[in-house]
Image (cartoon, rainbow, N blue to C red; front, side):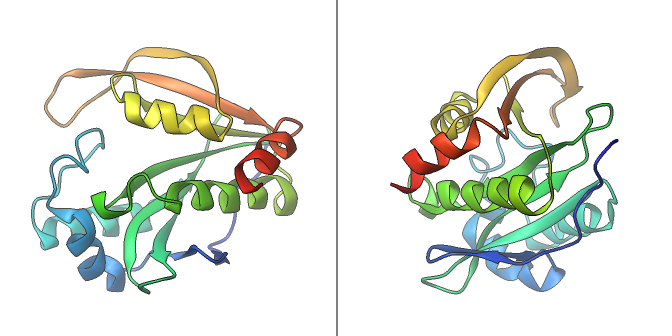
Length: 191
């Protein structure tokens, strides 16, 4: 049986609130990092204006292979990035967490860890998935380190997986977390 993508959902804890991404989030998102080339360096889009960010968000919202969520910092009440559940064709009971970006102001804070705990808990405990996949550009060592820190196991690299916005080929590092591995990682991250 292949599990289905979840319905849009609200997930929250003391640090972040994940809520369905809407175009109303775009002004906060642009202020957080919409025009920052370093934020978008490894992403499949490079919006430089608020209108370009709105177009990227609209495309993601309309894509039925993704369930995008705005990441709202509880302290400020403002959107500071987004993330998404993504379909993983060919993998039974697997879901991907991807399309994730955050404004630089929340890099190296508790935001990413709290987002991932909420998303992975929901995927395993509420949706019944067996495996969570995370992928990143093979050159994006900061993201790879963050994925390893939450418990992701490097499963391999897809060579020349897709084109980057600049036309060069991207090798994609693939990581996975299995349902039975998650409780120990969760305890470490939340302890």
